[in-house]
Image (cartoon, rainbow, N blue to C red; front, side, top):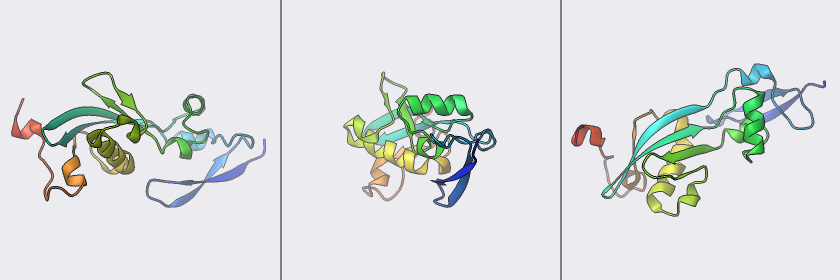
Length: 150
């Protein structure tokens, strides 16, 4: 099969060339996909009088099977398209989405957008302070784990 290259934007905004072995769909070679994997992190979302525990999943296929499933679910055909999505799941209640705007609420929309745009630089367990992100406060909130205890 013909080997060609496609371009992607990595989170660091540096351009890279990815080898592909399917000229029709741009599926990446197994060598490229081998280094990828979905990443799961937990966060504490805070806002005015708000505490929301969430889990975020960075969509990054590790092989052609995962790449195919993500493509069939509508997350793009190539990994560089698929890694633009972060699925956010509320641990309280039965709500999850990949689209920050779908939350229809300032807290979740702001937090989801921030997590999506900064996912690889955030640590699991970190506080996502919406008031701080929006510039409404000068210092970010501390985790309730520290201030309230458990």
